[in-house]
Image: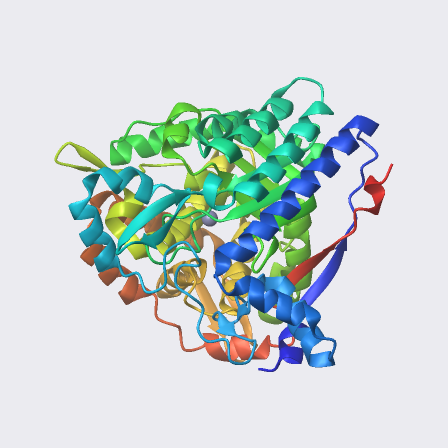
Length: 525
Ligand SMILES: [Zn+2]
């Protein structure tokens, strides 16, 4: 695929936030946060690979047409590797994507890591911290805190956040910004993560810092910097709020089945409109929703906050999902493919991440799922969130919160989601989990591809029943924590069904991804 073909499959769209609900001081505060957000991008460029900045600067200088295209595509991925196409290198001569960014020294292996830690037990805490990089020093390894490694830029971001706070009246957001600035300097994120859960998107949402560890494919430990600034969507947030009180009851039912201690914690939900993204969240397959922080101590103490980006969900839905629906669903199912139903599906998915057991009890010792299941965990957890989320939505129907027709529509949007992820490949965590779901649905005759009409027939009640059984299967695998059994199950069910590659080929003129063009001119005062 040449660079023009790659660019042609990305649909750009303008994001022009409406700041009219904010006061002058609040707008000043948000523009300081935008500064801090840009600093996150700057740090992230260095986290991707030690060579990344050099590649960025070389491409930026090129004035020929190919060079300009390569630079545009680099700015969509934040790297010379194409996240929409199996991470293929798209800059000539660049080689394979590094397994672990610049978090570890070149050539480090798991064996070397394990040997080092077995001989230096005092290093465990700093080495396994999400917020340190590992370097070689005099034939040995050392851990350097992010606050040192990125000191100047984190100081700059901290000052931006403090100036933002000074424009706001005392409150939850103002307090979070000050604590986060402090975390950037001290490398201790706990207190500010706790404070962030209490922020409710007012007067605006700020998520900023090192969060996800996806980029560390070696050990899944090191967090990438990212940021997300957004304005509250009060109507949509209100529409989702009615579901939250029912969630602890559902968790209680699960706790009876799988004997764990139900959480019962409050579940803050926020729907927002994007202002700007920075760092990891501004590149590649941009998230539609997230559930943070990842710190389990905070989950136990106060739960986690779920944020839904209406901007990104709507763009993906209208540009990718709907055109796919028009190709592969019969007309009678198209009515149910609405944005509101998609939003409910994502709601179920994100809530489900926080439900059910999360630890394995092994001889009185508690081990988190990801430790026992290693590289299988992400696919398993994402697929579990889909199917347990659907079971939760079915529970909402039984409680009279949604009707049959809505649930039917949600089931159809789930099928579209499979194809949305498969057009980028089958290896990524969500894509692999989707294969398992699809194969179960197909095996139970809940879905059927009619090759004559070129569209799917869906039996909604059978789908619900199948997905509910599958959620039990996933939870059992997680609770058992047996790597070999989980692997056997996933290998058995994650083969690519014979009809799928042909269908994907027929969708090749539909964009695979959307890319926002930020317009902050409304912020100028
Ligand atoms: Zn998820």
